[in-house]
Image 1 (tube, rainbow, N blue to C red):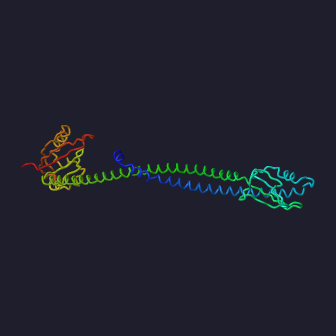
Image 2 (cartoon, helix red, strand yellow):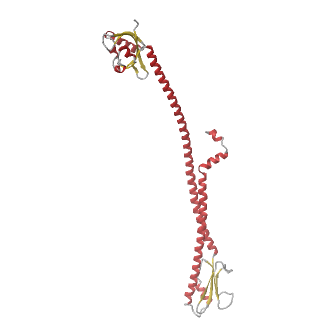
Length: 335
């Protein structure tokens, strides 16, 4: 695994990192910055428009105030002093307030407050005021820095919030994509392990089939050899009862092998030879060697019809359970 990773080129490593997850955080980053920039400009423009509306409302309020207080103006009071008293309240959103008379041509204003510079005609507002005795022109100019500050404040706030949200989204996306990449690697490793296990299982199935075929061939060979030998083969349990006996018993004793299952083999032995048979079983079990005994076996037709046979007995020993029974073979006795 390590040698494979060491032989990979840098381009392959970058492509392997790019494909799983890096493009997703990049899309989130670009989308977040784009939406933030658009929203910031929209809010800045909206804030600027609201500031302009506030400036227009303040200009209209000045005109209405001038109309309202003109009724209470004292005739003996100078116009300049009266205008100064009317506009004595500070107006933070206005850079300059100027009142000119339209009754005569003069460049000198009746009243001016704020900055003493040329008015910005693009944003300045003018209104004619026609009072009973006066015909004036009131001009106001907004504080342009205030518009910029409010727009910049909205822009900066939007950019800050958007950048924080975008950063959180990018970090969470990176973590999720890294998790997905790790899970994908785990899935690939498990798929490889599953393929190996499937291959091993297939090999085991083939070996099992081969072993089963070999076992079947061995069993068939054993049955054939038993049939060719002419001997009667059987297995007895610990009590000497028949667990298996070959088909030759039908030819010898005219008994079906299935009918003898669970029958004590001693019942097939002539009564005169049964004591010798029991001693042979005990000797084979105690000495753990094969014993040979000549005896007579009974057929199924009548007890007087006997078959002389040579019986070989071998006690079976299991490493775990110890003594498990006997294995016997019988051949016709030599005449």
